[in-house]
Image (cartoon, rainbow, N blue to C red):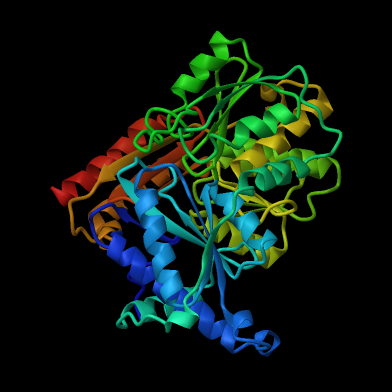
Length: 461
């Protein structure tokens, strides 16, 4: 069957528009509970009693106001299907991945639209292992969504509890991912929590490790998540680092699975650069155990830097799901995206902004070097990204296959020769075509990207 609901990062939508509504959330919780119950009922190891076959699901959320409504709807649907629910409240997405394993839950759910504004929302799912749900499980859930909702008998309904120490547990986990003697005393850090799910977690982690911490974007009101702050808006953080003469700044997105950094000069350090710092350190210490997975958007210069250092490198499709798939297939430990989604499989199962930032800080302390110095050996290739918004109903993939557009792309590729590349892809979350061109400094990659974008706009006019 075709996949109608699940994308590469769970289910996304806008409040009040199909499919993300309270009614849909109720049905989704019920469908997931049904699938989990069926799987547990078929497990001989868990058939000792009726209680042992009741699935356990934990639910966390970011700080957007719609999370309260959707949390209640999911809880009701899961309970109606006979699943027990543990509510964690505001919690970073990677915290749910960790706590799903810690509480021995059968699945974890995060109510979040990540770096999007408060009007949007979405659902992310984790398996018992803290990984994204398998495709076959998502397909089973979609099949259940087509069936009429049937509530379990009163004595078979699931129960719900609220876990009050979830934040403390996750804080201790984050600290445990670096050496127990790591101390950040003397480091002045500005954190940007995007008015999101890290607001009550990240400041405590870095303060408890000894850093002098200032915070912006740490006062969520349900409507201001990602609003002019966070990893998609780093201008305020850069200004704060300079004004406070800090050693660095750290910016998270709304659900805390991405991180970008600002060096002491106010310059942005993106996900490719963070990936380089961590990989170079692990490789130098003989702990990389393989290579690094990037994506089609990973900077040309990063691949070149890894080649010089003898570090294997592979590109995956854009999206953390695909990065993790390639890491698991290769049994490698490190991968990520320029957007700041960094996966350190040696310490976490998914992208984790706080954990990734700690890995970088540990390198700074070990080498007694400022952030910008850790980028020696990485010459980033100039890159330009232009987004073209598509009218409703446009077939993006058919558009990308048009002969006129392909001719424009081929002309730019001929100009670049072997010193750059072109990438066109539809956005996974918005009605956009993303046009990326990168090449050596002698090329005007911005003009090249705009030329291709103009070709796209001509086709949709």
